[in-house]
Image (cartoon, helix red, strand yellow):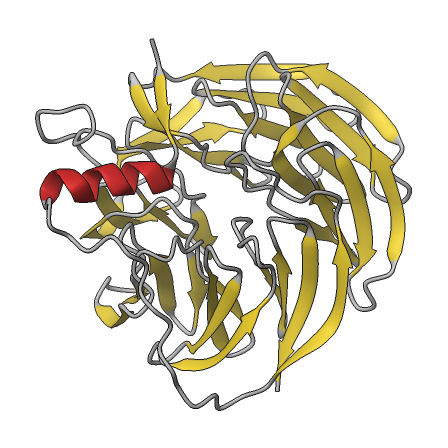
Amino acid sequence: MKRILIPALLALLAACSSNDEIDLEPAELVDFDATVKVDDVWSGDVGIGAGKKYTLLPTATTGDQLFAVDAEGLVKAFNLESGRVNWEVELETGVASGVGANQGQVFLGTLNGELLALDASDGAELWRAEVGGEVLAPPQSNGSEVVVQTLDGKIHGYSVGSGDKLWMYDNTIPALTLRGTATPVVTPTSVYAGFATGKILALDVKDGTLQWEQRVAIAQGRSELERVIDINAAPLLVGDILYSGSYQGRLVALNRGTGGGLWAKSESSYNNLASGIGYIFVTDADDKVKAYNATNGQLMWENDLLVRRKLGGPQTFGSYVAVADFEGYVHIMDQTNGEFVARRKVDGDGVRSPMLGVGDVLYVYGNSGELEALKVR
């Protein structure tokens, strides 16, 4: 029977098994002289937010709108610049996927295994389809096809216009995995997806046929815990290079066309990656924030002042890179050296949802439903 561990619990168990005397208290926040000021562009709310369960509920943008959903299925569309609510819809079903959006449509996956498409202009339901598995990652679309990855290791392709199922790819998953699914990357020709087996695959977006596969991590150790090598982080496509990280595995750079390896570094992470100024930014499993040279994988800097604070993945905006923690603090760092430049508390219940950076504005969705647009000056 398949067993699932949430990342925070798995990291705790791994720490305890490796060192019984390890200090498991979150790092205390260090004092520093802020060199920039953080302004509120706007703020809003999205129902109950992520709720009590371990859900991430990523937000999405298309055109001049930002879309967010809460755990009970309340979907809201906000104007990116003003924060005005353009529309809201109650789906009346639980949602754990967060939101995907592309070219006038909004996509969501429900806890009961459905894929929904909404009109981005008014929230009207366009179609819904049975997926047959729990959807934890936001569906992704290239405008013609929409792709959804389910917790059971399957990837499904659907027609954007009709919701008709086009194909399905099945990938066997281990008995013990992290609770989460990597969000696939969808282009006009391909789907790039990571799996709990430690592999990343490229599939034809039209029919689901395999284009290539590459192993990011190899299971090692005797216990099931030691052999967990999930790819929970979404692949990151920058030009012709695809970056991927795994838990207890590696951070790799691959040729997007062939899957050939360009460089690899030993690394353990289950959070999304970010890119900026020629760097790839990572939050590792110990909550250290790191920057690697995107061309050759050289470690450029490391910030270890936030360990055990249950950080989410890094997000770049403007000249900065930010991470959010379990107490709802957003920590803003200089991309060039990882030094703190500002700190801002957004939601007292914490922040799990991946943040969004659009230009020089950072959008943060807190666990209790607080949604804030922040700008540095």
